[in-house]
Amino acid sequence: MEENVTPISTEMNPPQAPQEEKERKPRRGVYLLPNAITTGALFAGFYSIISAMDGALFKAAIAIVVAGFLDALDGRVARLTHTQSEFGVQYDSMSDLVAFGVAPGVLMFSWFLAPLGNIGWTVAFLYAACAALRLARFNTAPESRSFTGLASPAAAGILSTAVWTWTDNNMGAVSTELSILLAIGVATVALLMVSPIKYYSPKNLSQKGAVPYFYGLLIIFLFVIVFIYPPGMLLTIGLVYMASGPALLAWRLRKRAAPDQDGSDRDGDER
Image (cartoon, rainbow, N blue to C red):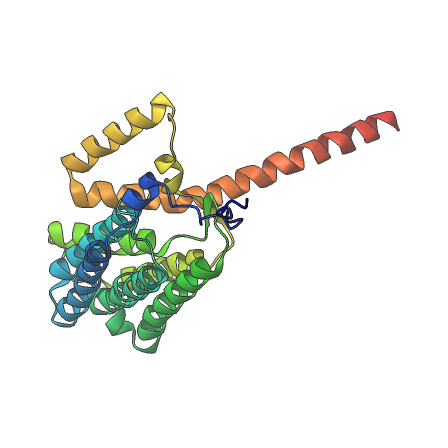
């Protein structure tokens, strides 16, 4: 007597995605939030250009500072909501080019570069071009714990807070002699953006895990001094950060050369 035996399928059901992963998957609507913040930074950069062309230097400088805060915010929002995308990366880069490349160049031209003629607009274009190159290199470079070259938001922050400090103190028009010195300063900032000099990245503080107690005290100290006089203190912090790259490079080179010098001295003593 034969019994009907139901054959057992050898095919395994495809593994189901864990419930936690399903819950972590972002909704499509959430993608609007980081891109809306990026649009706000783009608008601030565009508003800065219009204001600088109209001679409203204070408004133009503040707009770039606002763009910097929005630029720091959109990436963090994208990571917190798990809405990172290639579109967002490219859109953020385009926004940065306007807010931290073109807008500061136009602001410098309207502030003091225009009377310098061809030299003036050349320096303004040099800054915008170096910012574009810096952004392109950042997009194509592998992930790193440090910045290669001065970041364009930091460079734009230095220039905008310089204008903010100048206008806040009602210092009037810039003399020709000072314009030449400031033009050299703008060119230096531009070249630092495309330099191979390493700069500390604030992304190191966003890593999981505890950070040294000193960092907490430093952040509190920075908040206090910025609150005392925002434009001057932000400018000072930016200049110190800009100088930190070349200073650390010189320190590393000197430290690297020290063992070689000690070795040559020992060889001389043996002879």
